[in-house]
Image: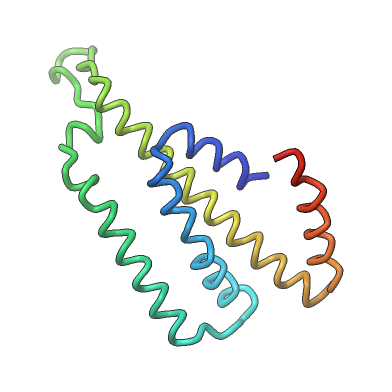
Length: 144
């Protein structure tokens, strides 16, 4: 449920292309969660792939964050003695909303990675859990 809510919030506040790049990190989080919580070994090639993915994502988003002026990131008061603040332009509000959307996208990727890790653990403990999930997906397909 958290994954669904965060996906909707991400899509409504940020560009779809950026949201989908962050959502593509879901397997990365699943591998890290499996390492931490299930004590699974992460093969060297998976660790290299995780490093490359993180580097590419940082490169993709670095230009957006470095081009933004500090005044676009934090509203600045008009003067020290004044109680009013300067008004922000619509471009600044879009940037602020997009950042919120990207945080929601990260929450969604983390939730889906945690879900995959939980399902992996449940399928070892309770083999029918994977089958039950497949049945639920098939039943929901006509409504999507």
